[in-house]
Length: 252
Image (cartoon, rainbow, N blue to C red; front, side, top):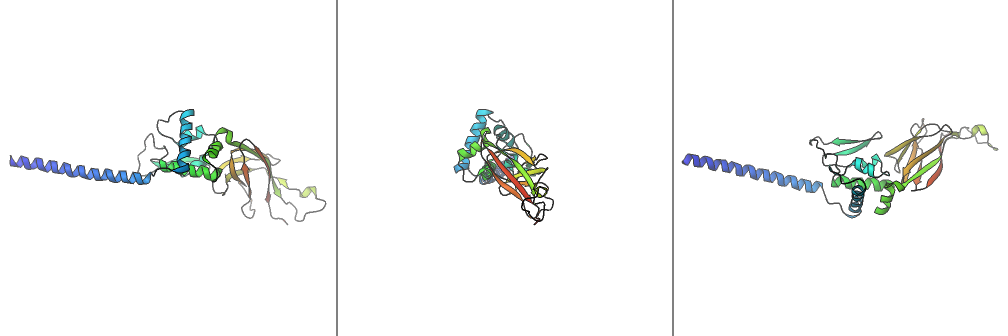
């Protein structure tokens, strides 16, 4: 009898220790998650509230959370690049070589909600969009920039010149700047994130539609031109901006 009593005490003692250890592990995980998922405050919180309400009102309540695909479908003024480095509960989005991909964390197992953007990820998402459209814009102005009516056009001509070592007076038609027929990249104002690509016609003309914001247009094949060459352009919602870009080949 005493032996059976001791066995029972041992079992209950073991269960108590295991429960205590599991409780400590759960507490530490909860503490870690609370540290990893800080509350979103200020303008970021207002922005996230507005875009999520917009999604629910126009597409419906997402079953598996708010992810990049849902936001891209709801807001034509968003780019895939806006989701670069945006964290989810089980990984993050990465934009490379003109393509957005989801990268699952090595320590996570895939679930149906793995691409749902976390609180921290929503903060990163807001900072990406605000950085592209303008850091001084209000939340309402940013919203206008990502909905359909926030689109604008850039049209113009891209040239290469000068084509003669000495400018002549009167100008020699043979020395006029030549149109570039090729592919061009639309980047953010800093020139370190690609948003889109477009091609010119044989006469160097082009038209590209972009969400409102400031962009840097550069050539995909600078052909050894000295320095970083391109042109900053400001896209205004509902308007067409006309520009002429000349790439300097350095002949003097």
